[in-house]
Amino acid sequence: MLRKNAQSIGDIIKQTLKNRNLESKVFEEKILKLWPEILGAEIASYTDQLFLKNKTLYVKITSSALRNELYMCRSRLVNTINQHLGASVIETIIFR
Image (cartoon, rainbow, N blue to C red; front, side, top):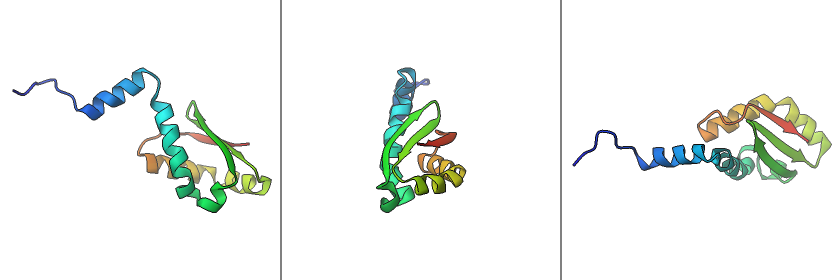
């Protein structure tokens, strides 16, 4: 018997995560896993902390020279991360 208002399990999980404000934590974990792939292991090794808050990704970089380089290409990083995630998750990156 088919139901007319049936939802997929994926849609139900997404809605539940959104209702419980856990969606950003899921994306934060995905970003943590993607970070070395996007920047490369060498550059990612200078990263101390990453966290997501209000569509802003905060990244602590241990090298001031690298921080300046990443700051110059942050809009490209935002686009690359959002493409990997398949959604517009972050709007800006703040390097500390």
